[in-house]
Amino acid sequence: MLAQVLKLLNYLPPEFTYESSHVLIRSGIINYRGYGIEMPVEISDKLVKNPIGLGAGIDKDGFLTPRIVRTGIGFITIGSVTLKPRPGNPKPRIVKYPSLRAMVNAMGLSSRGFADFLGRLPSILREVRDFNTYVIISLAGFSISEFIYMLNRLRGYGVDAVELNISSPTYRGSWVSDRDYLGELLRYAESFSGTLFVKLPLGVDIDFYRWITNTVNKRGFGLTIANTLPVKESRISVGYGGLSGYPIYPIIRSLVSKVRKWGFRNLIIGLGGVLYGWQVIDLIRSGANLVGVVTAFAYEGPFAFNRLFKEILMKLSEKALNNYLVNTCR
Image (cartoon, rainbow, N blue to C red; front, side, top):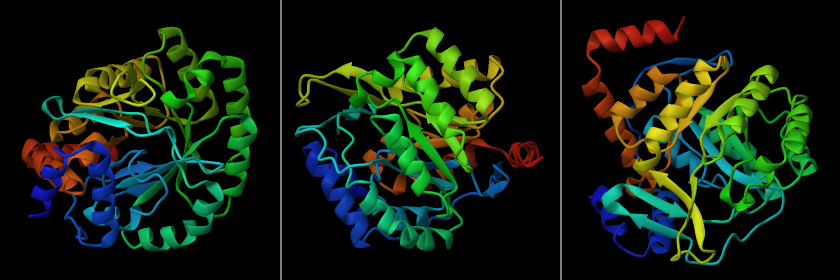
């Protein structure tokens, strides 16, 4: 019944859908434990129960995380969190294309701010640990000093990994256009003792991808591939946004394959346009270690994960699943 309600919400104004679904999840009405699947994968010396999780952009401030982890996902990404509170862009900020299983959003990096988040982080982690879910904190900063301040303050909290979001459409390409400045950020970030991922943009030239792949590889960081694709959209208040959903999946798969062919040896989170179980398997075979979901969750809520788990189990024969387990647990 609740799954049907969430589907109906998608035909209402997107902002109303976004806010209503968050209220439903936080209220505990949608509060179940999914059965998940056991497809363990080793990530930074930790065994994650399966490679499927939630990408950044859904739970920006960590309020939904204690509920969402009950679905049985292997990891969750909170954020992106910004140093100072940000209201984000004026509404309307979301346009959905149900027939394409896609959407464009320009939330504008809305965030309650890092101090607010840090104050609630211990309680968030306490609730999450009961479900053995790998926790990634996505940070967004407008300067090196902002990123480094947040990284330093996260020490000792026991988060599993941090994602550096240098690719939000809100930046309008500022980090991507200045390789020297971005390179300096990555040099400073090496002092962080935990696992780091760098979130790549879409729609930039191949030279940038080769450079960032080489730079991140040398520093031992992982990659999140990738953020949304910047597009024009007149129905959004700022006139542009990031396209996510099924249409961008071929780009994501191709980029994951390319960076592996270029010799990238570190962790990869494949993220973008994953709506079906076969895509999870496809991205892992293309070189991803973890596979994130965003748009499917935006359309279906937590029920998207149970559907994905069922589709994966149907797609993989027992022999194929056993082969997967052997290959990923070596």
